Image (tube, rainbow, N blue to C red; front, side):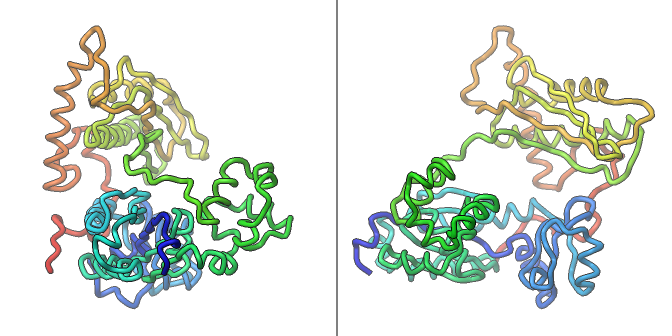
Length: 410
């Protein structure tokens, strides 16, 4: 490959069927069986292995329907703490190959590979294979790797060779690659945009890449023009190596039953608020608005927005507004099936400006307390320490769980 093929180099690494694959790592006896990972209370399928997908099981399918399709499948409860540990191991491997990494999701990321080839003295094809084999040998997971001049092409390259594949796409091969890719394969295109382009007889990524820029802007706006440039090998979308602040953090769930008991709703909301505060503290974030909602048996949702006096991650302060929100929302005689707490107006704790009345300073003791609670719960398991009022909630996890800590021997 010529140096002119690589004015810019981006790699996209995507673990294959991540949640299901994680379960197969810790339960190797399930190899050969379709695997489905379930939502809380085991209501729907949230992830599945490739062989489960081949049988017709889809994400969001009710469990009863999935069991009819594949009674031989293994149906396992989701264990997001375990998946997080596995994700951390994968990204620690990726950091060996590039210091510039964008964590795109729990199971995929982008790497800036500029200058890496000369450092390792290996071709990009060899580096892609090295990454794939390192992930497999050290975690037991398979991953697909795509390397290309732009992040859009790199993602398409990894998707084109799934599972457990690699594809290196130099600039001189882009046209041939796009000729065989449908418009729907372009990241960010979406169903509606794909349907719109088909009315203009644009069916392949190659045809889209050759469209008139003014027409694309008229039809799809700035994002469509960005995709055109990216598909033609001109990088426009930078890697976001510094995680952006979340717009919101939510902790919600069905209660697993329909009830009109206020005490049960209070217990579930307290549990959600505790988990919410735990994440805010762990990530050194503050929130200034808390959205509390109750879901009725009919599916209708009632909600109220509560604004905190100061940005906070204090359990005491947030629990107070959650309690007030429940008082406003609860109606005797109504029956409820779920509830939740959502934090918005998120900010970094380190950049917070102290208030005149010392409220934020007073919250610091609560933050220190929650940090201690987090440490104990990480070491000994969730709910080792929790509010007394949530102890009566029926545990949502009833299937066999993994014993922590996760140890990887080589």
